[in-house]
Image (cartoon, rainbow, N blue to C red):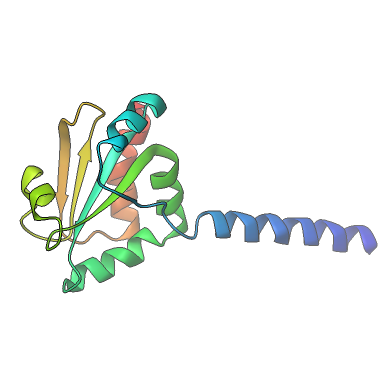
Length: 135
């Protein structure tokens, strides 16, 4: 019984740790340092164009809080949030005119793909999976 309790405690601790790790994406602000980070890490950059007034951006926040999405993004991308209202120049650079928009960019600032609109976790994981498998 004692051994069973210890095993259960260890499993519960691991579950909580994994859930806490996956609980949030480590969003960054847009800056030139993201490109040097991408070069060093070999990761792509995921730019999330959003707006505070956007209903589907709120729904997309639910997708981003999904544990599997959080792990995929944190492990394979440099995640960057761009508010299209306050960061208009950045939004214009990546042709973000509707929200939510996801732009995948490489370390040389070349746009590889753009996804516009809400995606549920399963659909979004599939779209990101193509880039994860390429790494």
